[in-house]
Image (cartoon, rainbow, N blue to C red):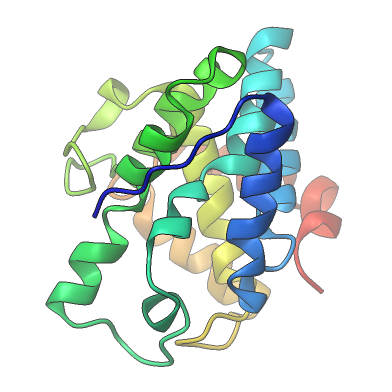
Length: 197
């Protein structure tokens, strides 16, 4: 699916991010929480200011490609079929295509495209593995996962905090960077307020 969107400023891209989030009531404020938690982890890692800015922007717009996914898929109360899954998995590429012409947010492109890659290489869209996945995308990925687990979704209720932690621990080194999972879990007392209540 090709989505043509004309935007001419960074303000427009954040407006589009808000529009993408507004499509799905279950993820209200999700991107803001992901952005804030990603910056928190980036700060703990000692990243430079430019990377922290990219983490915040990338966290806010990592799911912008969902604008190009049908509402019926985004809001489906059960598992997706193969075709629906294919369409959902297109959202990182759609998102990258939306923002790639905006120099002001070029630092977010790898976050948008690679936030669904898996550490074991089983993710999408490019099947990157391990440290070939850009660090900022790996940070947003683990923050995105934690927030998704701790939030209600159309296809399941939120997990209790212990279940969310155990899911992340089981996926450490497979789905997510083991070191980033450990860092996130160690920082939960400081960032828990960012998760949906």
